[in-house]
Length: 88
Image (cartoon, rainbow, N blue to C red; front, side, top):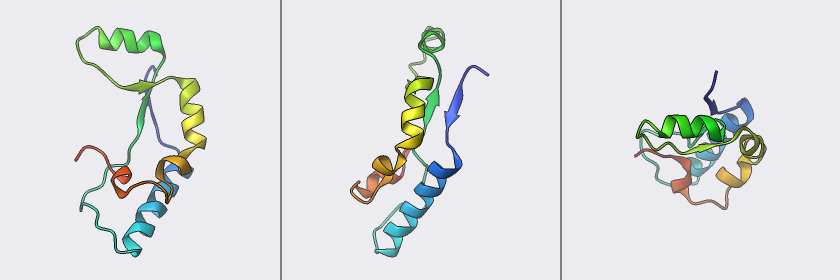
């Protein structure tokens, strides 16, 4: 495997609870939500993929380790409701 997607049970669970808490407060969210996530690959693999003309946003395996543990900053109560979904 040369490319992975950053998910993880704790991150997904936190996101679900963060969305539920916002809904319980009466905040309006789209009917379809898409959890923000990241493609994980090395810089060398990103250069190979991007050479095809497709510009892909990614994080390195090292950065993914930080993000996997820092999900509360990404989805926490201080974040705007718009942080709960991407690709709309």
